Picture 1 (cartoon, rainbow, N blue to C red):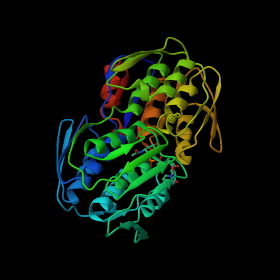
Picture 2 (cartoon, protein in one colour; picture 1 turned 90 degrees about the vertical axis):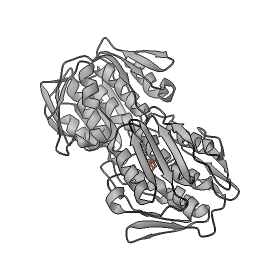
Picture 3 (cartoon, rainbow, N blue to C red; picture 1 turned 30 degrees about the vertical axis):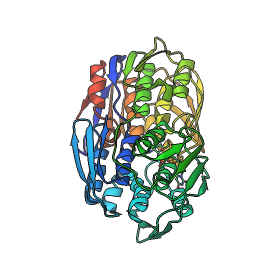
Length: 419
Ligand code: UD1
């Protein structure tokens, strides 16, 4: 992979065949951070082949861990006393670095993590992470571009109510609370399957957690945790992306190693658009034999429609029959993608956090820019139904989240190459 790589997509082919979904990016990075909670060797399996796993490995190595990565298995050997500083050069490359905050405060009583700043999908503050750790007794401050959290005498369980069910804040508070003295409750907690996955890993390490997948998580602190082995949950965003790819191209894709039950609302939406979804034990199949109908969608925390699939549903509506409204409720900057999609001839009008999309019969290929991971993937999907050639610049964004995307598309019959 090269940072100047581009995707060349020639539209017009329906996608047919089978794909396998790897472990979730949004889970594996946090599972790796969670290993810090116990000295000794933890093993994570079903690890996706993405760059962020290498960055997290580097971060853990700098904290004193020994990390090995062979195929889809990562082992992390954590020392008795890890160090506690995550520098800006790594945090700026990968926002999920912030997930070492909770584990480090809990384990070594101090964490210094560079502030990640905003990104292409908008400002991403950390106030809820910090307030949660303070509620558990940590002293937190922001100094010289770092968030510094300290609790020399250990953390104490507390009742925390989040202003918004933030995935990252729930994870950091949960990972800190597992070693706190007494009971912590997190109210208005995130319910994402990725977060449940991390909770299950913590339970395997000996944590006492109940209420995962509900809005109230209860954690009874334990004195220490032990290393464990855990398989990363399948990536629901990649599975959902394949589902939209089948619908948009009027194809037929069988999506293996996937959890349809983690995609209830997206699958309901593509069914409303006219697709036929068949579920089986280890995945599902999506078939579409006509132009989709436009469907309204509002992104919301899980089990709402995922913001990470918003570009895909906008791409679908861009070629659907009718007009749809897509409302973005989670990240205000996500509509940057719309400007790029308009370059392909999509008819989209944005008003605040609402986009009104009137479908056209066919888009028309043009050079466009991937502004973030999901936007890049959405543009490739749009390119698949654009007449002629679409060049998606800054393909490294796509590589960060979607290992082997171009190769998998080709195997399904698409005309996609990397240039
Ligand atoms: C995670 C996912 C991301 C996904 C998002 C929502 C990872 C690595 N990333 O991001 O792909 O799109 O969940 O499903 O897992 N907020 C605050 N203060 C805080 C924390 C968050 O205001 O302290 C706001 C954010 O700016 C955003 C909203 O809450 O508007 C949701 O963010 P959050 O759920 O925390 O997303 P992430 O964990 O950053």
